[in-house]
Image (cartoon, rainbow, N blue to C red):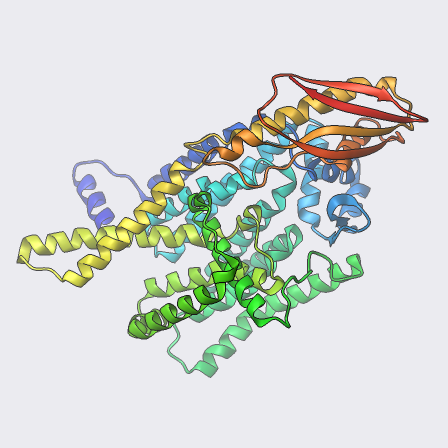
Length: 548
């Protein structure tokens, strides 16, 4: 419907001597996406090195020669940068830190500029993917990119340089999916397109392990989006044939990763008790609830909680409601599988959105905001499709009523209800986005970290080269911001190994040891920070941070 309207507008403009080509319109839309993304996250360019893992990742992955590139590709790293930390192998994201250090040294502006550029490029790719899935509907594609680019969940990732792997994984995953769809539906350059798609899939795997989600995404895209009137067996053979190169690529990467890590690696700790069925049910309910609340970010601040004792009853009630809903809407649900192309696209995106949730359920862990960066891609497209579908259906219904004087009451009610819900969600996301609100806690922890490290730098020349530094009173949060809506949930300050990494970056040959002696909560952001240094026995020095 919308595409026809745009075509008619273009024809009218052509008659009047005004002609905007599709390429010109696309260029304008892309420029608007870039502009909005940059405006929304412009503040992060002024942040210091935030997060416990940022400075250690930079320090451990410096690039001074080509040998360093080989070292980064052939070595894993541990979470927390301690012997008991989980092993990870993310050569692409760690390599990016080395490249940034080679260019920018210890200038945080360059690192944040890289993150902002990657995020903006990812938003543009969301536009192209949505345009493909909606058969050229540029308005829906533009809205999808805007919702993604300013979604508040992104504010949990972009300020922390160490969380770049989430952005890079989503970026490379999108490129691989877009090229795969081109490969599937085109007849030219198929070998080249397949090679490019596999290459970017490898880059996604090398950025973060969750890049492996491309496999089920490809499977469901072939199952739902490819028109095939053949039998299920023939279609299944077609899917297996298309997926074989990706399965081989995955096997090779896993074998290489296992060779590097010498173990499975990553956080594979399961927290569900398989012997307690009720505990599993309650945990699944909590995990699922948290996942969707975080997608609809503003609702996270409503403090939606559930009494643990009432969970079994609530679980039974929800199951009964779901069962009645499925029975009542059986034909509509069945229509999603064999119905229109638009319904199949929505179903495909819904499955994609649920894939990360399946991993959380498998491990029994509620996912964190910063790990949901990829989840907001399908969420943004689904929201935009439903939003414009309901709006244009209402417009059609009003035209029908004016022409015939009648309308379908049930259909009208459904469209009104859907438009209210989708518009409400979209507006709430925009209102709570960094485009409209300032997340001051990030600036506060940035200022504290910068002032402390610069003050420590000035203090180091007066300490012995093998000093043992005990740091007291470093804040883990500024509580004033916790009472504000919105506020970030996962603000991260410096750890002891972060401070040590800063010292190593300044002087690689030092033998200083850093011990962080607990954290404190600050009531308000301090106007002034001073360091009180006290010498103890031997080479031990206490550094007390004082706030004014």
